[in-house]
Image 1 (cartoon, helix red, strand yellow):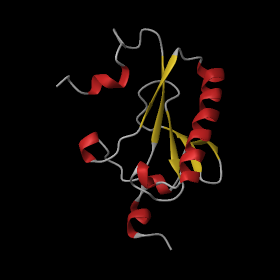
Image 2 (cartoon, one colour; image 1 turned 30 degrees about the horizontal axis):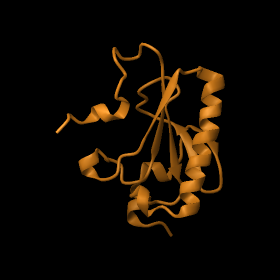
Image 3 (cartoon, one colour; image 1 turned 90 degrees about the vertical axis):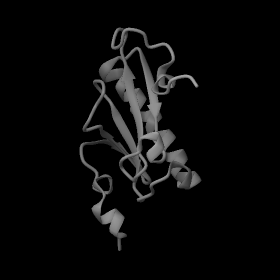
Length: 123
């Protein structure tokens, strides 16, 4: 029987799945930042990336590899960002782990140098 949190969780009800394995599914991101943006989501309701089991972490990585291969064929991006928000201070708003795979395209921003490091200003 699912917990109350899992019963309320949209990510516990996979939609728009593009690939899956026993522990993880990959779906198109509903708030895509770029063509092909997907998320890898463990099937078990778990909020913190570091609370996933080792097999779940391995399954996420395998799913990201498979998703990247598919995106290379379908969208031919010039690069990728992989991201996961852990905790409210890091921007996590959905309390179910999901790892973003965001295709990047030459010219999608004026200056991509620094990548995900540009989220924070230098201290």
